[in-house]
Amino acid sequence: MADRDLRAAVHELAASPLLLVALDFDGTMAPLVDRPEDARAIPEARAAMLRLAGLPETRVALISGRSLDSLVHVADPPASVLLSGSHGVESRLDAEPRVTLDDGERQRLYALRAVLDGVADSVENAFVEVKPAGFALHTRLVAPEGAAEAQRRAREGTAAIDGLTVRSGSNVLEFSVRSTTKGDAVRMLRDFAGAASVLFAGDDVTDEDGFAVLGPGDLGLKCGAGPTAAEFSVADPAAVAAVLHELADAREQKYS
Ligand SMILES: O=P(O)(O)OC[C@H]1O[C@H](O[C@H]2O[C@H](CO)[C@@H](O)[C@H](O)[C@H]2O)[C@H](O)[C@@H](O)[C@@H]1O
Image (cartoon, rainbow, N blue to C red; front, side, top):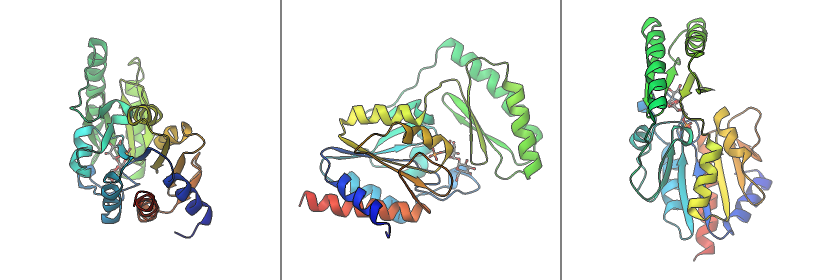
């Protein structure tokens, strides 16, 4: 870690009373890969997550756009790690998670599925990922013109369905019948943990909602290039892991 300002901020954060370390998964802990089910945290990031989760007065959370099931599959977090999935729709907070959709939401979900399946079936290598309150149309393996066309048709075909939240991510277009964001997830997890300070790390456009709700005493860490509301940016998941290990070192000293 070469950035002195970031190092100073990490050491300040380490001195906080109850600390929440909230981490996005894909692109932040894990490099992006072709098939969502193959993504895994790099070993250094996983080790940092486990170190921090074992420290006193420190809660670790994963905040992901993935469904909880998918997040658990790829991240394999210990039970003490708090989870927020589907962009804030689902959560696992020291207890079994559950999402119950109302009738209207269920009907919108069926209508959504019909449109997105139609698009994916007609575009080679496009596929739909199922989540409890929505779907992700993946186009990473589709040729660029085909990907743009698939996303255009998906937007057009779902335009008549009320109350949808549509998010564009990395080679993915996501649709949800709920409008929660990662900002809602950060707020909820901060309250649940009773955290005095929060570190939130993320890489994608949807993580900007999480950075936007951070305040004084918190630390926002963007992974990768591009405009961001986060206070600091680092290059890649390895650099995120280095920051997390620095935080764990400093926090271990505080409690030794
Ligand atoms: O909030 P995150 O944890 O960053 O999740 C965002 C989306 O991640 C997954 O899709 C992305 O990663 C895949 C695996 O590397 C990649 O194949 C895909 O192109 C990316 O968009 C996940 O599949 C989505 O459900 C998440 O919303």
